[in-house]
Structure formats: C-alpha cells, structure tokens
Image (cartoon, rainbow, N blue to C red; front, top):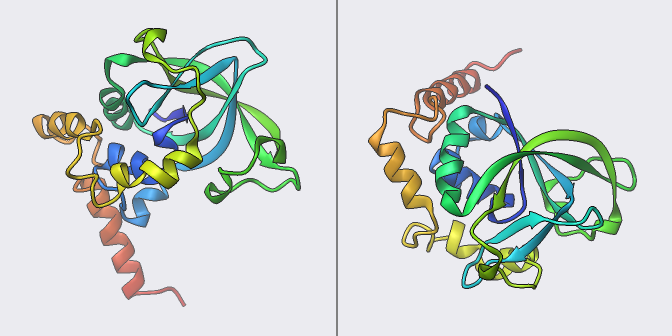
Amino acid sequence: MSHTAFFYGTLMAPPVLHRVIWGNTSPPQALRDLIHIRPAILHGFQRHKVKHADYPAIIPAHDSFSVRGTLVTGLTDGDIWRLDIFEGYEYKRRKVTAKLLKQTNGKEEGMGDLLQKEEDNSEGEDMEAEVYVWVAGIKRLELEEWDFSEFVQEKMHRWAGREAEKADEGFKDVDDAVAALEDPTGGRGASGSITKELEQTNSSESCHPSR
C-alpha cells in the first residue's frame, strides 16, 4: 500500500528522512527515486518548539494558522512502520488535507527552495496525507515557532552529519526494531532485497547502455 505523509520538522530534511526509512542518510539514487518530495502547507495547525529538543510539534489550531512542510508520496507500509517508531508515543498519526505549494512563476518548487518565504509561493491542489500530531501535552511546548532554516544551519549536523551515528535522535529505536524482525521495510532498507535488485539493475544498464 502506498502512503502520502506531510512532514513539518526534522523529517523535512531528506537525509533525516532517508536515515529513518532506509537506515542511510545517503541511500542509492535508485531508492531516492522511489519517493517524491514536494513543498506543501497544512492549514488549521500551529507549530511549536518542543522544550529541550531540536524537533518541533504541531497541534490543532484556528484555520488562520498554517504550517509549511513537505509532502512525500510513495511511502510503503514498511516506511510508515519505521516512522511510527521514530516518532514514538509523543505523536499520533492522523489523516489531514494539505495543499501543494508552487512558485509564483508557476513552476514546482525544489527542495532547495524550502527556505523561501511563504509569500513567495501560491497554493496548489489538495492532497490527502498523514501527519504526526503532538499528543504529549502543551506544557512541554514553547510558545515560539520552530524554524527549519535554524535547524539546518545549527543542528542538522547532529542528525545527518558525522555526529549522527554517535547520537541517539530516535534512530536507535528504529534500528533495533528492524534488527529484531526480518526486513519489515519490504526490502527497501539500505541492505534490503529491493535495494540490491535496483542497484544490480542500474549497474547492468550502465555497463550495457542503450544505443
């Protein structure tokens, strides 16, 4: 079954998302091509910093509030299984309707444009998605808005840099769960059967290019 999810925090960064669903911050291109990441916006929610943490949370709010993030399509049941473990008990997955974002010139944004101001974009079509909503109580949240650009510039190295493997940002829970079962990702993990088949196919095609 294919899933679509809206991410609004650390998982907006592809290396972090890749680390969770594939166990590798830099998976083969064949794996990256299995999902599609696009900028999107979710209305009726408000994003806050979580106290003493690098990651944010969203809670339901008035329709005048909105949260900007990414919409990811092509996720499998196994990917969602890993994401559920990564998010943990503090969040609950629920269905929402997000809107895709487009550049004002009509072209679809790339990941490099995520740091643009919201007013530089126009809203596109509605997309049904799943999102992780905070359920651990507002006392653990700060009033201040979580900032993606600040995370990328100041904290990203702890999640996807050289320090990532030494730190436990929730990855260990996922890794331990995967190790306890036989490839619950459906073969899409970094060492899964699908990954190996895709790499072999790409290798074969590169050795025998079409004319």
